[in-house]
Length: 234
Figure 1 (spheres, one colour):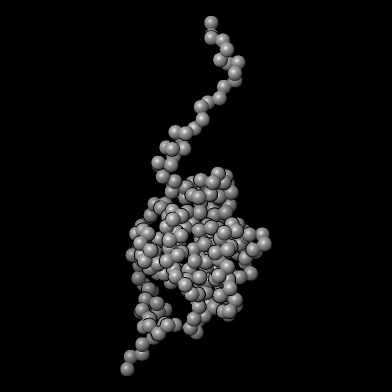
Figure 2: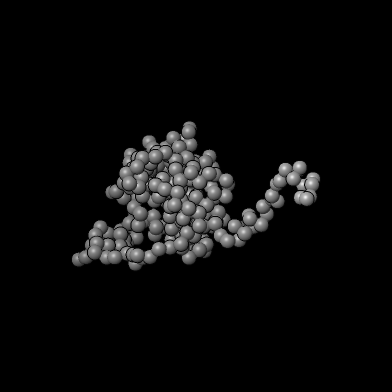
């Protein structure tokens, strides 16, 4: 008799969630490069609201906030421990970013407030990764990237916000929003953990043409010394 494995609420588990299922399989999007396409604030908030209630919803909202408001990579966010958070300073410690580099990033007060419900749930779970599995024999262990992407896609589809809603797009949104707020590109580079400004500039391609045209169109007139207009050249 074949054994049917169930998830934490008693539903049959998909074979895709089993260890080794993807071994030897090439990702469907292998080799594809997607343009910068940061979701607007309205869409991100709609997805957060659509997540619903309960621990799983608090966890998803918490992860969205960390990706969006601190600009972390999904791998960096899922590697965080509770001890990496410094609420007093508003800082998050990335112990091993891309290339093994260590850095600290900031997160705004609103982001910390949205993360609080998940932190309260997290206190009741075994010590381990900040964003962890909630139920079953593996509770407390790190949440996986595949599981995150599935839940994000499902919630975004329910919210009817866009065709694609991926973790890296939230990182792009963070960069674009800081640029719009006038944050120097050097600060954005350090926040994102980029090796050079060229990479950061690619992230800022999410600023659309209409915004560029409007910004340049409303530039102030050139300023010249008053004395320059007093005499006509002879």
